[in-house]
Length: 248
Image 1 (cartoon, rainbow, N blue to C red):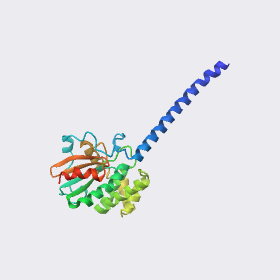
Image 2: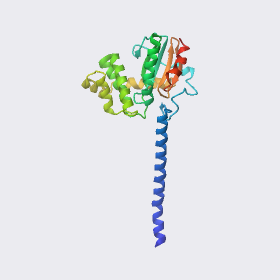
Image 3: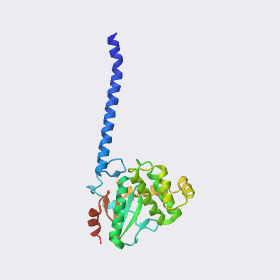
């Protein structure tokens, strides 16, 4: 009888051991990710990996990929002169904490360089950010209803919410940002729920991927001759300025 009892308990002990191991692995992974987030060493990526966001990647886009960056047009969201000597074309994700961190950096660059640079915002919602696609669509609905000034007000608002929530969004965050940008809530909700902006966002995502974007933020330095190089990640102002200066 004791032998039978021991045998019947064996599968249970195996299950307990497996669960304990899995729990330990999960907790360890969460601790590591949290530590890296606090140290600012992660950057959002399209595949869910986490390369550094504080320095350029070792290998940038190829010449063919740089040539694939779509030129700036009147359809783009832009701050500054479209014919500025340098135009920063940023592929970004409203739910990405590193994009939120980079947002004031772009504002500082615009302030420091004046008419010498301009900023274009394009969408690159990462698949593992649940509300990034809708947040991007929401910005386009705001632009449709309120114009460019409302679009940039929405960007400011959604990134502020992102920061307040610790680098994430909720569905209601999108409506909150839209109302803070000054558009009619009912009209905004109708536009967002219709999905009419989904294809525009997905097209920009595909174009970014074709140009070598793998994570966010990814900012191309554009001149009259096209894209010159990629600023990969949320680099600080002092690292970006030498990259810009060589084209001025």
